[in-house]
Image (cartoon, rainbow, N blue to C red; front, side, top):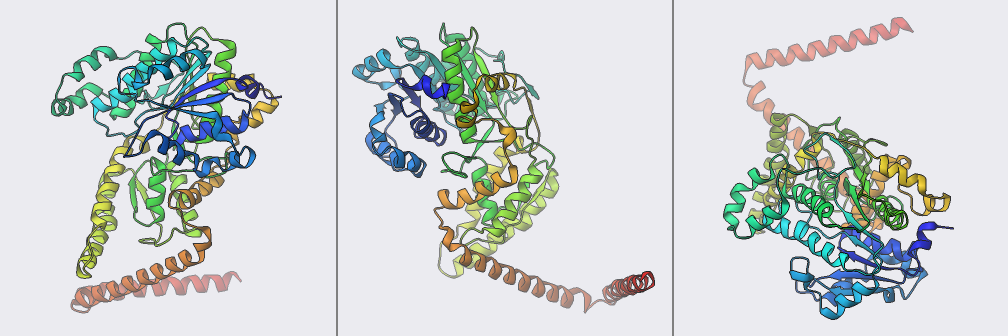
Length: 515
């Protein structure tokens, strides 16, 4: 019998960030593996002209719920949406809904956050820090609360090379920082942001570190756990291999490489690409919720959810498997054949950007202008380069995370829970996972049907023939301009050809003698 599933039976769960990538997988896993859960309350805000009800309706139609839909046709009845806004006082929850939450919630999963690396500091503080403060304030009043689980990031303390499962002290008081920033003009904040965040690479990791410290200071007597996933990627096994629904993180890079748009990237081939499948994070989160509620630890438990220490995979390997997968399973209407070059040398990277990115983009935009269409490729490459610059910090170095708490938690699971809530990353087969991930971006992000593979492969062959024709034409032009007109160039050319001929003759003779 599953101890975790038994714990959640009859419980009322509150989830923030449920419409996000990880939030959807968390809701789906709860419904499918803990079918006796009483109700799942989700905080949802109106967004992009959609009402709360419309957003929830769209969420329920998502493919991630297909397995649950087959087993439990009326699964929507267990989902209770609550209109809320993290950046507003009291979360903008009505008094009636507040009373309802305070009287029935047993466990809180706080997943909501802005994950944009270049988010303005004030907005990142409001969402990631002030939002966490408000959720904590609400949770402290809950009469039946067993546990509060916060989703952070393994890079919250990326200014350190060795990261333990502890909450580190900060050089600034988060509450004083929030008070100071609130009255400042946006332009002033933008200017002083580098000084404020110090040796953190961006506002996302910085505000996540602040949120962890706030939780430690404000949690009171609550049973609290913090989950720190590294780079969250597509699903490994659940609800099905390769599920992904966004361009964030590695997904956008994979698609750009598969389309032949990305040809160079600054990265250390020997650095660890610390990807973690979303279902591994969700299984650990649910297991941590059970353990925190049942064992009631005296201190805040932190779980580093990473793969580098137990099953390392490197950026050089990642590049090889992504390119080979997209050559076998190409994306439709690729710009060029998939091919990428990873280098840690800035000058080499800039050279390849000029040759493989900017020059083709300018030529293609010129062709679009000639045919009366709007140029777009240079704009795409500029956005891509901006994203690459934000990721350089994480692709150029490695970190070491301790995982003692995660190992301890794994030891608390029985055989059934280890199977149903598997978060053992040592079992992950990287080549298989990356192939499923790439195919997942094709099927679920780009909505391309696998029946279109023959046409996509034919398109790649066409691109290869165009490339061969272009290279041949270029060689002829170079010959006509340089070699045919210069006696010295001809002498060098004849010398090289003669040298190659002699080498081949020697090789053939040596082979004959050996036989």
